[in-house]
Length: 136
Image (cartoon, rainbow, N blue to C red; front, side, top):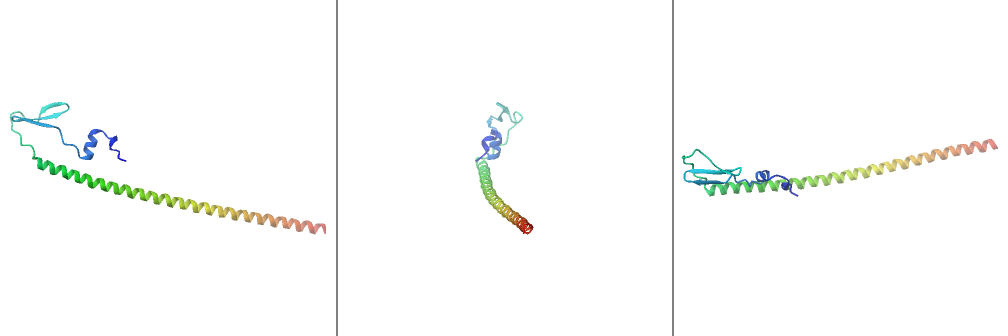
């Protein structure tokens, strides 16, 4: 799921390449820019400003930005898929290791119980033999 909705408007514009700049208007020989809610003159009054860039140049730049954004988005999705795959592999390996450790501890516990019982049986056997030797 995307987290772009958590970002403020200006950050989203910068991240997605949707920032077109401030609105501009040209009246007579002056160019005005709309910033912070007001129209302000962009350059010194009376001087002719250079013509705005042609729409084809802006279109090419915008298309280039969209293409770059698409490539980065695909790379990001690929990396997310790799991370998910690695996390699954790590989870499976950890589960197998825990299962093996549990089996080893159960085996060693069973061996310990068997040794203890054998020792107890020997001790009882010694006591029985000692008791029967004394009574005879």
